[in-house]
Image (cartoon, rainbow, N blue to C red; front, top):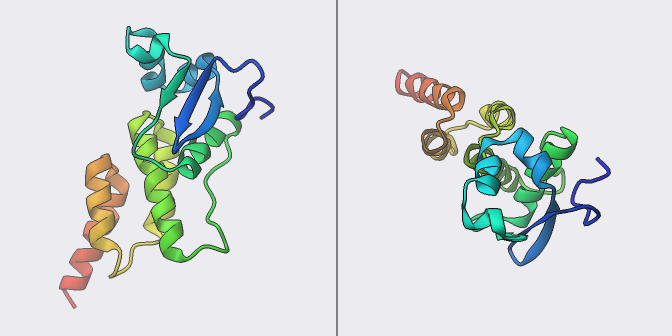
Amino acid sequence: RHFFNDEEFSDVTFIVQGQKVYGHKMVLSIVSDCFRAMFTSGFRESESMEIEIPDCSHEAFLAVMEYIYTGTTPKGDTRASREANLNRLVEILELADRFFLDNLKQICETLLQGMVTAETNEYLLQVAQKTNAMQLQAVCEHFSRNRESI
């Protein structure tokens, strides 16, 4: 926990939406084959001290890093709307898939299953298919079948 987003002893800095997030290559390589490959396989990231992470919010990336360093699972923001919480969880799921964090991916799937409604089903089904989230996909398909039989 002490080293989560702490510049001390950090050997890699991620730039997300123009903001810095500090990391440690060894910690990240231990938990993610994607990070390990990024830091060791001749990718430009293996030589760089700063790595830009596109296509995600600073908040979602920070939640993923917090999970890696502390095991803290993503929580909904009680002040945010249901839609904002859903979008945040979807973004964390997409990052978990991108960085091969299977346990975090399962946690997000479980949390998103409770958010499947008539309004969100089609969107969450697309997200599940995109991220290969089989549990979430099964719940969405089951929801669709039940709605069709009514």
